[in-house]
Amino acid sequence: MDEKVYGLLGVSAVVVAFIFLGLSLSLSPFFSWRVNALCDLGLSTRSEVASIFNFGLLLTGFLISLYSVKTLVKHARGTGVSLMLSGFLLQSVATFDEVYGPLHYVVSVLFFLSLGSASILYAIERKSFTAAAAFIVGLLSWILYWTGILDTGVSVPEAISSIAVASWVVRSALETFLKSR
Image (cartoon, rainbow, N blue to C red; front, side, top):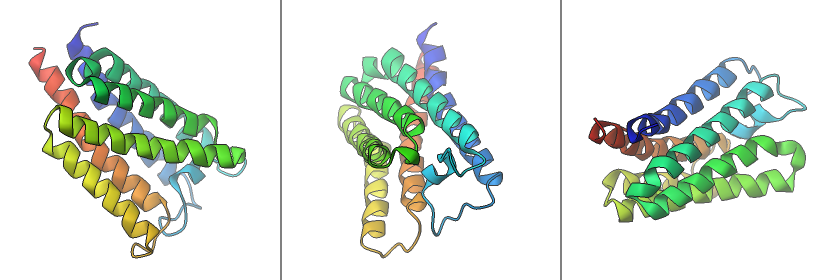
């Protein structure tokens, strides 16, 4: 496959993530943005959409890792390695759902930290305002949540920080796709 196709994998990863998340949310009567974590959708012992949600995480992690290894690492080495790790950690979040207790918590925290690291690295390596803004927006959402100013479930900062990172990932993937024409 050429770099153009791998560029599309970066876009596909984000599209897949939001399709499976949207589907899981629409089919889950218990989920509340005011109370839940997104991972509650993947709790295998209680969620009727666990298989949908977790498959979406696994596929997204695979696609983002493939994009990172095959394309992003050529243009921003540190970012490519960091985002590949994020993809692996996303797959770990799906594999070790909340049934695994502390292990799930650890891989979830590491996943969001890796997203922040990838954003910082991309901002530096590619001088990307979008990635810098994504890091700031994501960090701010977590700070507002931790301080109690944002009175919601943890799903809100999870969603905000993920959407922010998705913005620069899609942009980088589209740039790769368009340059490869």
